[in-house]
Length: 252
Ligand code: 5GP
Image (tube, rainbow, N blue to C red):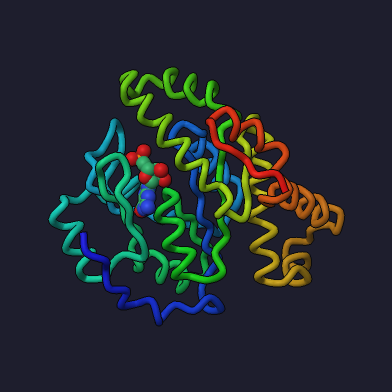
C-alpha cells in the first residue's frame, strides 16, 4: 500500500492535544481485560475505535470494537490521508483515524489507542508527547497456555501468534513503560497509576490535587507505582521474560 498523506499532521500540536496513551501487547497478554478495567476505574478516557479489514468475531459490533470495512474502503481512506497510523497485522489492515484524535481533543478527553508495535512507532514519530505502555506476558509458556485455553485458535495459529509475540516483545524498548502482566489486580493498579500520573503531570499536580482532593500520600503512592514500570526500572524483572522468548538481552 502507498504511504498515506498526512494532511492533518500539521494541525495537531502536542500542547493542544489531549493525552494520548498507546498500549501494545502480544495477543493473549491480557490487554483487553486490563484496558477494560482501566476504563471502569478512570473517568475521562476515550477508546479509539480502529478501522479494520478483518471480519467481525463473535459478538463484536461495527462501531463498538472496530469499524469493519472492506479492503477497498480501507485503501480509499488511506489515500485520503484519513489515518494517523495503520499496519497489517495477521494479514488484515488496521488503522486509527485522525478524526478520533481530533474529536477527543475537542472534548478535552484523553485517548487510549490499542495498537500493535508498528502502529505505535508511527504515532510516536508523528505525534510528540504520547505515553507508550507495553504489556508483556509473564513468560512464553504462560502465553502459550493462555492462547490454548481461550480456545479461539488452531495449534498452527497459536504457533504463529507465539512467533509474532517474540517479534513484538523484542520492541519493548521502544516503550516508555513496561507492564509484566503476571497478576491481574497488580497490573490493573499499575496501569491506572501510569495513566493518572501522566495525566496529572500534563495538567499540573497542584490543580489535580485540589480538584480531586487527593491526599499527598496517594500522589506519592501513584508516582512510585508508575515509576516502577518505567522501562529501565523493569529491565531486571523483564530479563527472564525475554529469555523465555529467546530474545537476547544486552547487559550494560
Ligand atoms: P485483533 O484483531 O485481535 O482485535 O487485533 C490484532 C492486533 O491489531 C492487536 O495487536 C491490536 O492491538 C492491533 N490493532 C488494533 N487496532 C489497530 C490499529 O488501529 N492500528 C494498529 N497498528 N494496530 C491495531
